[in-house]
Length: 211
Image 1: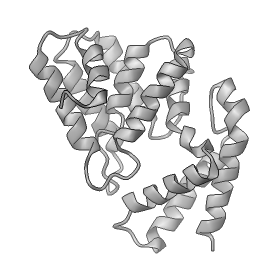
Image 2: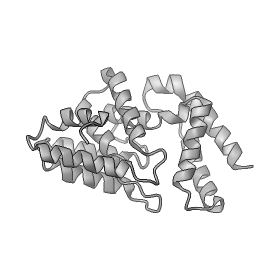
Image 3: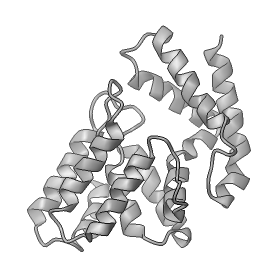
Image 4: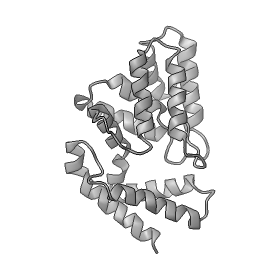
């Protein structure tokens, strides 16, 4: 779908590493197909678009824009709430596609590493670009109350196959995991501006889940 606004971002990015226009189109078609799946209410193309906007807005903090952009396009391409290996499978899809291009192998490995990191949101190697990526991915936690509530409702819809007796304990565990960390965000700017708000939002959701 060349008319899709994200296609131009994708094309300008991938075309630097391949002259195969069919490969470029097929790659984007795969992205559209996956992110438009009917069970996605939050982990969809809007989420991808939001993260790409953050990369543009905070490009002065990012060293390797292309690697981060590719990680964004692929990081949720596989999303099945009944599985625990979505990040691993998404990283594999990214690797399989990028290996058909001339994108450097060491950077393909980085793309995969960044995607896998979205499972635990840990960055043991202190990669500053990964810090940015993980903060962008969690920005919704610090959104205005109405936006956060919409996000929480959409996550519940994505897990609609599960009853509250299963969903609520799982959701509480995830939210508490973020609260128990020294800080939710990794970059200094995000910590200072958004950490307190994110914690307020999470506490509010936890209270609702406990009713």
